[in-house]
Length: 288
Image (cartoon, rainbow, N blue to C red; front, top):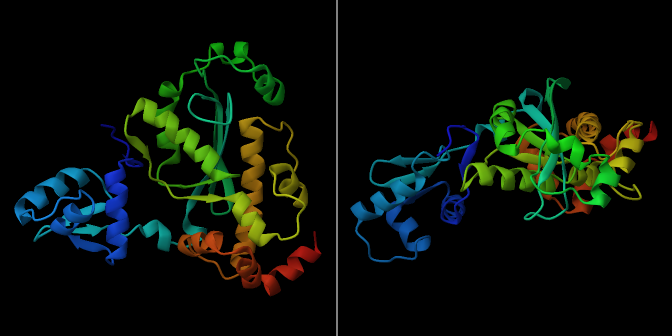
């Protein structure tokens, strides 16, 4: 069991419980949860309450109310203004694209607060497996460089404290967040980060239509942002942070003020997202 508030269980049963509660407007009886999630019918309320209480214990996303009613706690982060949130923009370099068996070799991140970059987190990581020649050539990170670097298990406490309750940002966020959560699960089995995230690839596709592609180099060039050391976590994370600051201006111009609206914007079909900000974006695009 970990003691970090931004870690939660990655249990499938918990995820199914969250989905059920969302379908029920945020509340459901423990017996209903046992019926739908545990697939056990005709169980008495007291036993259902014990089962569900054990499932959700120590998980801050849930509250067990009187009468064995479970309530999904509202994430106030979703309703807060983007201007009031902290963001941690992250990039990872790894021994390969798939995990497992691949491992992180470098972790870089920058904290944004009040539309300013205010802090950073930069470290090599000893992956405990050889770095393939192709990856060493691409990143410039070789086996000798990581030999004396800390293990991820030594890095993770400082990482979790650095992130805190910030919103994670990454260029192709599923790749970076999945890799980090995979590494976290090796240190804290069955745990993952609960922090919400936004993807600058997805946001860029909607906010900057018409680019030839949405690779980091291309989006950075669109904003005249240099990347001194491409495929190094710190340099790529810094470029992504600067891109995200531009995207925050685009979101504001389109009337997208809070995190929930930004998530809806990410999920919109491209045509609809483009229509949301078409008039607002034209003056900005003309200056690029």
